[in-house]
Image (cartoon, rainbow, N blue to C red):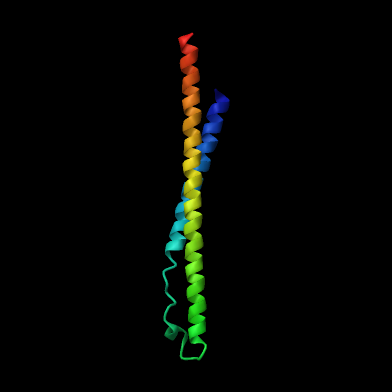
Length: 101
């Protein structure tokens, strides 16, 4: 039984860490909010529009990537939760079988 408990604790720690990291990626991604759409923030130079466009593209891409990371880590967390539940179910079933004999 000690091995199963150690594995369960390790899986829970991993799941908890992944959950925390997903939230952190999401929070960072939420900070990218199309702040660079107006070329005037870069001054009145001829290339201000190009700089604004490039900054907006970077802002959009970063927001998309952080959202994707948050989503992927959420999927990892749910998969680890399913594994944990499967281990518990098998362990419970084994204990029930042992008691029935």
